[in-house]
Image 1 (cartoon, each protein chain N blue to C red):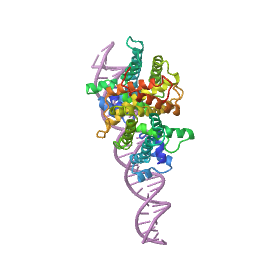
Image 2: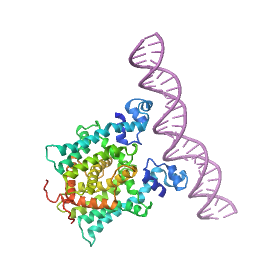
Image 3: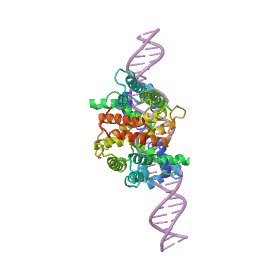
Length: 208
Length: 208
DNA sequence: GCCAGTTTAAAACACTTGTTTCATAAATCA
DNA sequence: TGATTTATGAAACAAGTGTTTTAAACTGGC
């Protein structure tokens, strides 16, 4: 499963063959079908390993801010949530080598654009539950916000995070072209500041 | 090429076979290799058809705002740029059927996550040139912005747009789950307002 | 030691992929 | 018209895919 995860994250579902996985895991191709019942089932198993954990990590990050004794500002909420996104990548960067989930976030981005999971699984077990908790948090922290714009606001925040990761991938592939270097810490700081201001732009109905 | 474009946009590069394309185009598989020299070359040809056009559309949209006689506000810039993103999708929605480029934006999103174009082609011929012009425009419109944060700001705007399109795709696939309905017009309005406020948050150095 | 039950491994299977062959058909031009 | 080029189409090709078969090897209790 570790070998499968590694390869799926790096190359996606379609571009990873069971033979590669077997070779990386040092086992036979038949073993994969014996234990998992097929490539697709293995893929789901790899996901099952992290889906719950990542969902709970996100929800916990939100809850910790909302019910904690620290300051309950919009900024701390956004920062806490953003960190659950980039933390795995940051951990990898620190250790200078792969470990644990690390690149799983990248597989998430892939799955959004080119899904190979059973229908709705990702939305049902990850997107929706987190959306609910995050919506609540934003609504209580920004009571002036019309409830109808809350989903849009969340979409904006998540969009920035997802795209930042996707672009990191993209720029990582083309080495010599003149693309801005993207520091994870700077990225988080920016997205928090940008989004907080973006949300507060809704505080007063004015439109310049 | 129309058949290829249609299929590539809907299913991506890997999941589209030359036989499917041939069938859709009403020709033989050999013809594809005869005229294009292979599947990959055909893919590049399909891209070549739109890359320049879309790049110029984006650059024109920016230039029109910056050198036009109308008001030169941050909002008009953002709105104009955002429309070049969603316009093809909006056109499709209005006509209630596919036509022209329409879903090509979705292929762009795919290509970012799972590239099958020659190295750097997308970045070199699309991302970088547009980035330059957009940076200039943002810098003149927001002279108070530190030049170093301009790329981040642009990343935030593009991220919201790209993610909005990706999520539309994603939610379009799962029919019955309780996901917010995403109206393109509303989306643009939100992203413009959110981003303008986000950028203006940098106007004064204060951080609540 | 022997015999279930379980696990491994190589090979075979059925299928799809992109590409090529080659004979025929259509078009072009002297 | 007749020669030459260009285009088409069915079949073949080689390489790769996920999965299944089949037999051997291991395992642990008796």
